[in-house]
Length: 262
Image 1 (spheres, rainbow, N blue to C red):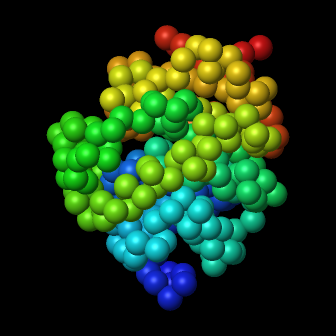
Image 2 (cartoon, rainbow, N blue to C red):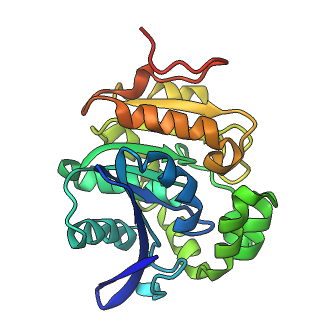
C-alpha cells in the first residue's frame, strides 16, 4: 500500500496493472481494500487505482474535509498528483455519488462512470446508515465470507462523522438530479436485495437519459462486487471495453453472458 500527501495530510491508495487509468471509489462501509478483486480483474489491461476518502481507512480524519464537495475535490487532487489524464470511474455507494458529482464538475477528465448502489430517488437511503456505528454497518450489510473479510476488517477504521456528513449532504447536493444532468456515459448497478440503498422505481428508470443504462443484480445486496464477483467483473470489463463516448445501453445480463446485443 502507498501513500501521498494532499493538503498536508496522508491519503492511502493502491495501484495495480498497466494501461488506461481506472479509479475505484469505495462506499460508506469499508475502504479501498474491498476493491482488490475487481482491481485485479482489470489490471491485465488497465492501470487500476483505489484510495481512501477523507475519514476512511488509512487516510486523514479531519471533519472539515467530510462534505461531498471536499471528497469530490479529493478525486481531482489525487488525479493531478499521480499525473492521470482522462479516466474511467467505478464508484460504490458514497463513491458512486462522488463519481457522478466529479464527472459533472470535470466532464473533460472522465470518459465513463460505473455507479454501483447509487441512490437514484429521495428516500431510498436507509436511515440505518446514520443510526449504526461503522462496525454495526459492516455486520448489517456484509456476510461473514472470505470475500467480505477486507471490508469487515476496515469498517471500524472509519470516522462515523465522515459517514454522517456525506449522508446529510445528499439532499443539499441534489444528488438524485445529477444523473439527468450528466453527459458522460454511465452504467448504474443496483443489488435487488440491497437494504441500505433501495432499488429505483420503474418510473425513475424510464426517466434516465440515453447515455445511461441500469442493470439489476438479483441475489445481491449492497455489495454486488462481493456478492456476485464473477458476474460483476465480467460486466465491468465489458463496460470498460466500450468505445469512448459509447452509451452502455446495449449491455445486459443473461443466463448466458451476452457482451453486446446486435
